Length: 79
Image 1 (spheres, rainbow, N blue to C red):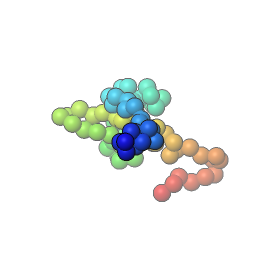
Image 2 (cartoon, one colour; image 1 turned 120 degrees about the horizontal axis):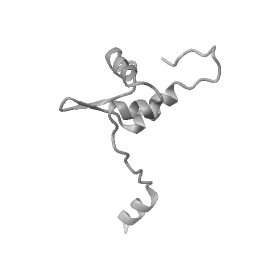
Image 3 (cartoon, rainbow, N blue to C red; image 1 turned 90 degrees about the vertical axis):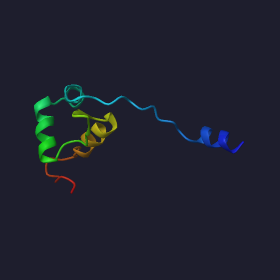
């Protein structure tokens, strides 16, 4: 069956639950108020706002952390 082949060849990634600001701060080794400041400036990780609540997808936090990796202090940030 074609569907069986598709399912067996496609890796299914388990979705991790979204984190609130305090949990995201622990996950990223930062402080909640630092993430709040980054939300205002637009320079932080992507976040989700629904019904007045802010949540962070752990995959987005991983991407944000990885974007900050450098091999040298003389490297500039990616644009």
